[in-house]
Length: 87
Image 1 (cartoon, one colour):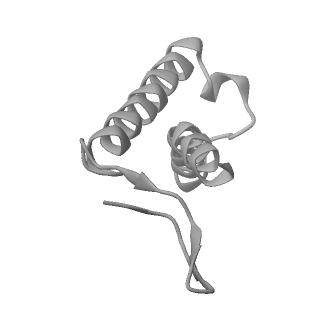
Image 2 (cartoon, helix red, strand yellow):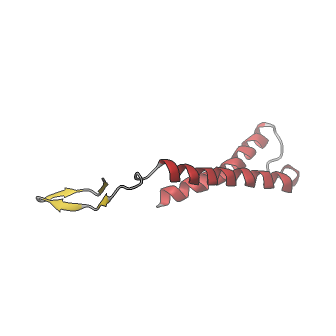
Image 3 (spheres, rainbow, N blue to C red):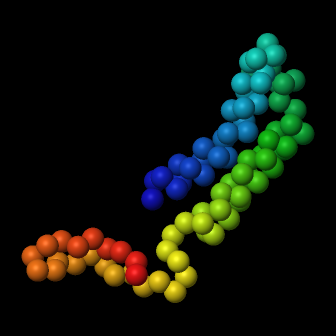
């Protein structure tokens, strides 16, 4: 469960980190309030939310089991452990 949450956190923080790298590369004051106007923060937040929503849509459509498949839980078969799987 931690991996999906970590993925979403990284995607949300990515635009802000890229902006910090941009400020550092242009020798602008990273911690200076003039480098962080409200409009810039709003656009970064919008970009972050677009990335997060896009990842939700991607993971919903392209990962997981196929529709109509049946999950067979892990079980013991002839003394051998058989992991869970979808059929």
